[in-house]
Amino acid sequence: MALEQDIANLVESTNQLTSVIDNKAKTIDAKMAQLDSRVVAKEAQVDQFIQDATPETRYVQTIKIGGSKDYLYPVWWSFPDNSFGTGNVTIHRNYAWNGGVNERPLHANRPHQSALLLELEGNATGWSGDANYMNIKRFSERYSNVASHVNFQMYCNAEKVNPDKPIYSGSTEGGFGAWYRSGSGLYLRGGGLTYRITKNWAGDVKYHDGSDNLRRVLREIEGDTWSVRWFVEPIPFTDRVAPIANTIPYVNHPYTPPAPASA
Image (cartoon, rainbow, N blue to C red; front, side, top):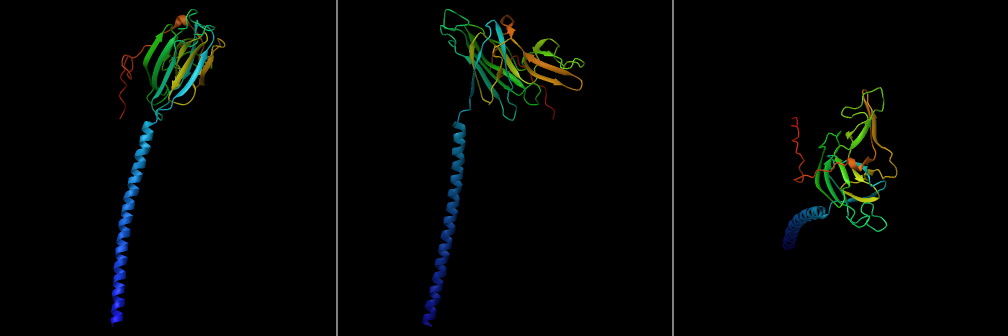
């Protein structure tokens, strides 16, 4: 009987030890789960910190517009739509660019040629269903005027694609106006001037490099009841229209309240 009792006591002790080990294992598992949760949370915090600390990508394009200093040459692009957000583009040049003794297209006796800082903010195009706007946030020119006709809908010429159909509503056959519904733009002075275009979305802007005075077709469309060909070409510097800088950043100038949205 003593041996049987000893065996019974040993079994009981073993069961108690197993229970203790099981409880400890559960405690360890719970602690590990808490630790894993904290690690995941910290990783998320680190990822968010890296995202917040990473500067917005800048896409930089340097262009040189030849031709004549007595002409303005078209530059055009399309802002990203709502799926991207707000597009920002700056057209700028240092006052002394092209100021070397063998260049100086605007002022022959000094390196100070023209300083330009034109900062724009916008979204989509005139034919988009998104926000569709452009603001001139900042504008500065010194020494010489070089920027003209800055507009959300690019200033362009228009003509019919099909002479038997009316021209698209809003455009005038043979005229010049802010009619291009698929892009924004401006005109920059030629003569061999260098400009830099810095923006926050990928892809180059398009421009007339001044190698000739021929037109550049922006777009041509023929619908069921209308047709239109929008195109651009150099315009005389004497036709310059100065940009109007906003008095308050991020606000349209002049401000036009948007139409009420339908429910």
